[in-house]
Length: 404
Length: 140
Image (cartoon, rainbow over all chains, first blue to last red; front, side, top):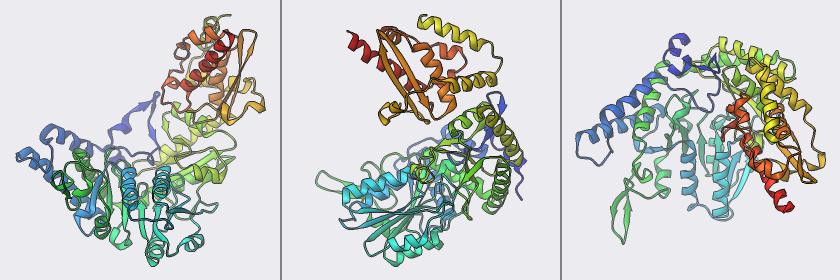
């Protein structure tokens, strides 16, 4: 069981007020809040052992290096990667995706095909479009149905011997749909294609096992799972990471340098040019510790209760339509009320201390599918409560009244 | 009336409200009353970039004064643009270019003035001033 009142005490920000009202933070799918345990790790780093890593002979550098590499082991363990060097630190999901997309540009040729899903975030579409422009490969899209679920029979039909890479998010940021990535991976492998899964929205809610999934690449950001911004990871199978060329040149990523020839460092350093976000990496590890202490089973169970309760309460409101009604979804509710613009509702809710996201959620193709300008998105984390949902419903009704 | 006089009139009206609810309700009502732009001007070209909601603005010159019409698909945004248009319409281009917009702060809408705010109030002001610059050039 999860003791939400005890958990809430870990998050100092949940005590603040916004526009004179207690903050109700329902924008977790954009970024999650940070517990004191993680804040303490950040403060401790800068207070006690801030130093550059991997190259100093002195004690501080060694301490920082140890903590940074210790965090990599935590990430490895969390995702059950076979080797710690299959975990590459990045600046976040978008950076991870670009790293892979850039690497594939040297592996693709004209006539090759990349498959993405209709449920993608912009950051997941643009790098592939750029890759296709560079390599002459073409981009295919797995369509979705009215519930916001991918149409798997269409996916099957898109796969062929030209398919080189399949890219799909584990969970849609706009709708909360949990995609059947096990099926997607298995089918892609059957035609010899690699699979990259965007776990930005899934990692806060479930614990992926990259070996069990047999996924080739899996990426996520720390800031959506109680960690700091500006750090994330790329998991890649060793064989794939060896095939990809380095992304950026710089310190740390080289073995030997002369003006005639440079040889690159081995994994993971080949992809970690320059001084990384050291504190961020260490805090990422602390965030995983924090979430694992609560337990992902407890988190999933509790968040499902919030999702069911929130859905039930919202549907009582006349004229309210929820977008994304997949059977398998996480605690994200995207909705509109009648013809009221989502921006108007978001503005009024903010005046009452409630943070939601409004707009197209960087997923314009999904909005085009539903022929709407955007939605209001309430996304819950394990530190949210049913009482907050009640207050949100009251505020929402007031906003509707003012705007009608 | 000069732009400043209109702005002072707006400040007076808003000073009667006691809390945000009354202010926003008034803005929403202003939005509903906004003189609508002719449908033919609701083109992609007339959309102001930088807004989360769609905002269309059209300007035309009558004598040496500019008249603005506008619309938006979001009602609060419409209210904001109604206030702006009321201050800037039927004014000489030079007066529009030189006008300051501190009154937005004084009517309690300061939060909308942030350049990163998704409603793009800053973009709207810029667009109205760009029209003024264009017409001033024409008048000269």
